[in-house]
Amino acid sequence: MKILSEKKLLLSQRHFETILAGMYCGILELTPEARIVYCNPVAVSLLGMPEEKLLGSDFTELFQHNDNQGIRKLLDTSDHTPQTISGNSFATLNGKEFSMKILPVKSKGKEAIVVIFKDISLRKNIEARLIQAQKMEAIGTLAGGMAHDFNNLLMGMQGYVSLMLMDIKPTHPHYRRLKAIENQVESGTELTRQLLAFARGGKYEVKSTNINELIIKTSNMFGRTKKEMKIHRKYQKDIWTVEVDQGQIEQTLLNLYVNAWQAMPEGGDLNIKTENVTLDETYVKPFKIEPGNYVKLTISDTGVGMDERIKARIFEPFFTTKEMGRGTGLGLASVYGIIKNHSGFINVYSEKNKGTTFSVYLPAFEKTVIKKRELSAEVLKGSETILLVDDEDVIIEVSLEILNALGYQVLTARSGKEAIEIYKKNKDKIDMIILDMIMPDMGGGKVYDKIKEINPDIKVLLSSGYSIEGQASEILKRGCNGFIQKPFNVSELSQIIKKVLR
Ligand code: ADP
Ligand code: MG
Image (spheres, rainbow, N blue to C red):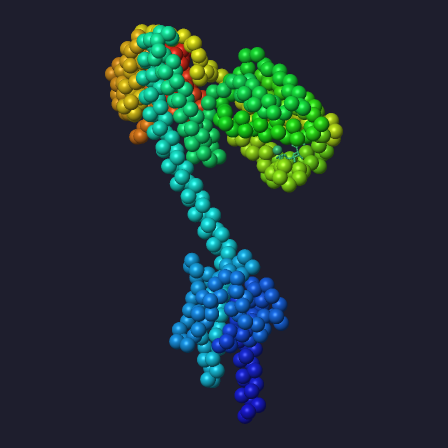
């Protein structure tokens, strides 16, 4: 009889041990003094200690680096209620975070404590990343909204300053002060530009750009401090316009210059060249891009060069051959992303000890660039009728004054719907439309399409603080005649109106 019950006990013990060993949680049994008397395999691996060492040791000492007082208190099971550590309070060990259940048990007059615990680091980590992503998105929305509104304020200021400058001679004492205000507005615009670029994250804010100008700006800045390196520049005359995010392309150029400079520790030559090129089907095929006109930038150095093995990996994020602190391996990865984002591509040619050549191709964009800040720019007058569409009162007011001062007849609309109605009624009178891109209800793109249906030949000038995700270039591709960036001054506006009306 006794033997039979012993056997039964043994079997049931094995049965429980199998279950405990197969659990996904760590399970420990402690004496009331917190000495470990049992641990299952998961507990061994979670706690990172061999079973021999765990058995007999003080459980609270494992957690002595954080809150072991707290744990000791939880283990005080005199009132026999189970305890849980989870949610925001948890125990940490070896960089892992644990949620725990502490169960007092009593069998045959013997007290014990069972601890069941789980590693929640991964879940915590994912939660933290999610919160971070949501936070960045919220900040982005806030920054984007602020920048957009602030930009409209700047447009109002720029407009009124422009109007005042029209009426006074450069010798007037206020002339200089008004110019100073214009400069301040310019700085403000730079701030909103950065805010918007941040808000958009990976997306970009495009502007019609003369790439030669970006190269002059960035290479002068870079060359000033790097005297051991000679910079040679060769520019294409009448370079085609590209539609780019200037900040991102500046970043791209600087990354390429820095790499070239680092590849020439003894000094050498940096050659920068721009060209207009037309690429046919066979050429573009391997790069999965459209055939057509491209602006090509070539940046080559006479540095250490690369072998095939390195060359194959240079665009990988975090690939670097440089010592700690000198390279992050993110330069070319970001260059690659930016160029790809601009529907272009990048090529590299290099041989060990024979220098390196990077070629960047950006799609050419046919529309004329309206240069920002054309100093001493002339103001061109006209007499045609213009329909001005914008949802912001201050923009309507200041633009109306400017257009009147330039001699134009002006009709105004404060929404897309109103614009279409007014256009329908006055389509024989209206020579061109100045159309805001971002408006509530109906945006510029939709208004453009509807008005084009009424009159396919209508001339439309798109105006916007910033283009969102290449939205402006989309509308321009559908045939819109021009684009002007707010804030603009009188001469800029007067010139682009002439170009569109021509
Ligand atoms: P980092 O400069 O931080 O190392 P990059 O992504 O800019 O990262 O470049 C990756 C690697 O490509 C460099 O570590 C280097 O080995 C190689 N490389 C890039 N540009 C050049 C160059 N002009 N000449 C030689 N090697 C280069
Ligand atoms: Mg680099």
